[in-house]
Length: 129
Image (cartoon, rainbow, N blue to C red; front, side, top):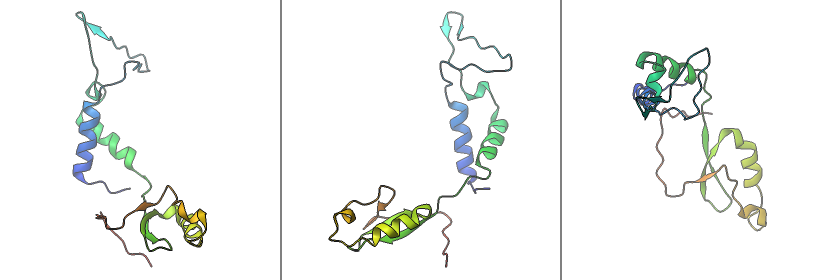
């Protein structure tokens, strides 16, 4: 399972429980929801569906098996550095091999994020061979 921190899980549970359900919310299974009560409109939230423990179980279920985003740092022929998704590695190297004078080299692929001079932070970094 993808490793979520306890704080991340708590944050997701809290956000879900405070989320206002859409106006066209129509639960199945015979559940009836009245949009009005005593002359005012009720605004249902996630707490109408689950309590905190149930919402936490749902968050953990959703996170199980979630693919990790892996990135590497690549450089273009001008020496600019980029954060590039591992899933785009082949496309990156094909683009990076285009000679600098070729106009195709002037358009950086949209999946690459330039990081020259930027501050990078990492959670659970790994060095791969």
